[in-house]
Length: 87
Image 1 (cartoon, one colour):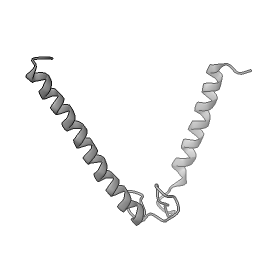
Image 2 (image 1 turned 120 degrees about the vertical axis):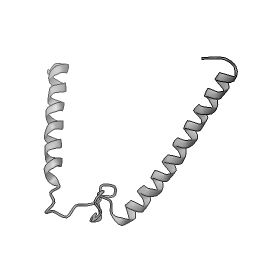
Image 3 (image 1 turned 90 degrees about the horizontal axis):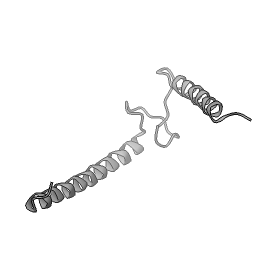
Image 4 (image 1 turned 30 degrees about the vertical axis):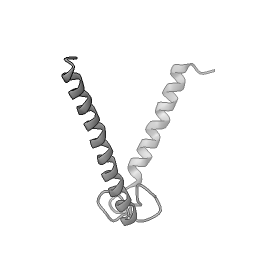
């Protein structure tokens, strides 16, 4: 029965092999597939097909809005602390 260290080493070796295969799978000469859906050719430099590029863009905008709301909540909390003389 392998020890935990041997098992971890075996997993690391498998991960390294998978990473090598993945790295060599995409070459400039081969048509690349979309990194999001994996079914359509992705002519864009970011690796998205046109449909996924539009979806990723809208997700980015929503994420930035959520981040802005989150940060403004922390700013309001910081103001609340300062008004009370708390650290």
